[in-house]
Image 1 (cartoon, helix red, strand yellow):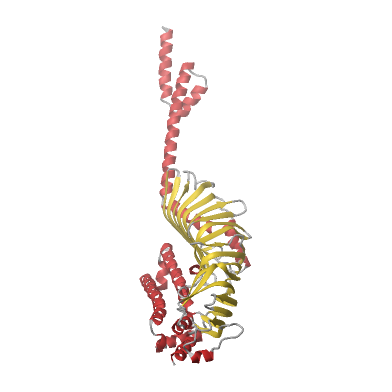
Image 2 (cartoon, one colour):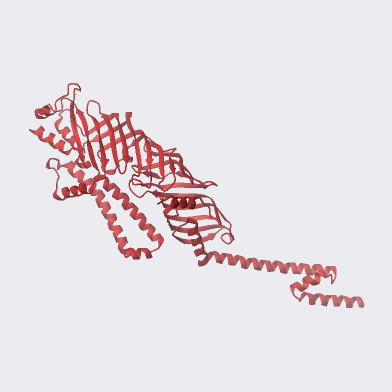
Length: 548
């Protein structure tokens, strides 16, 4: 009887204890009250309740973290951290999200300042590792960040030594809260330089960036490379090692057609005016890669030679090249009859024509700097057909020379003798580019009009301004091509011709007799004026004398 009463009492006590609070049950169990079985029962029930409690807390925490990533506050905070990490004056982030342990950003735009290594940056479709707690705690390891497209305009230098140090610090100092081991960019386009004397670019290249404790390594494959008069070269292998002292081109191999260019070993020393020191090795490179568009209808062929590269990307003189082009049978230079003198010679020579003159032997010593070129030694031979030697300079026109050219165009200063096909070609070549340039200018003007002036432009989004900046840079490139038609040539060359070229023109034979030592007819030809004016006076004289 007492046993049944004791059992009933224990059951009612257990029931009462189970209805009490969680912490009371723990204290009751640890006090040793109740039977051993009852204690185990209570522990199991409390363990289950504790598990449910922890699951509820975890679920709430997960929901909070997920909602946090989707909040405008988090996006704004991330944008602020991006701005601080890049040392940018302005930054904009669009389309942030997270899925399957990775973050995704649709677009990033940033504008640089005195402390940044860039003036403009735009990246699209970024992704990398991101756990729920990343960005909440201090450490976030993104692993390798993948970017589908990057457009960046690099700073060519700094205003002073202090700004240069700040630039280096911004580039090589790692952010304390975020660690990125590497970047893989499917399509990278980088540009640098403020004028045609310093301008260069890499477009549409696959880029891998590997960070290290002392710097970084950039590995480009594919895409195009240009620097000054070296244009549109296909990138075979471009590996650049960067550190706070500057950068070294460990591998710099380029190709265009059968021609190659090797800039391996070139060094760029950092500072407010970064200095370049290296050698460009050209082998069978087509002239369409090095000549201004206006000159390609006058001269064609391939060249080889080693050129010393000097100068700075942040100086008025710009980047310069100096070296010798050597024709030793492997390369050929062809001068076409767009040169007025050659057209006149074709009309006078009854045996040969001068529609094209091929040079297979000789050399050209040249130097480019400050937007111009100096040919100090010129000696080319086209066999018995034609030879030329001398020197000349090419420079940008003065304001007076520009005005003189405009006056000639306004008054129709063309010569009637050459008003035929050649004259039309001379006019047509600039006209094609003028039409394209005019179209681009109208497009830019319409964009500026829509922006409503400078004040409205400031109110547009950073990403919209980036697009307008790209258009402006294209305008600068086209303006450079246009200015190449206004370059002024000055110098003198001596050509030699076959002894029988003037056999039908006694007046010319008397004026230009055969040199007994050479067995050929020498003729001194002054060079002065624009590309389209060269040898025009001599051609007119030959044509008029030959018709009498």
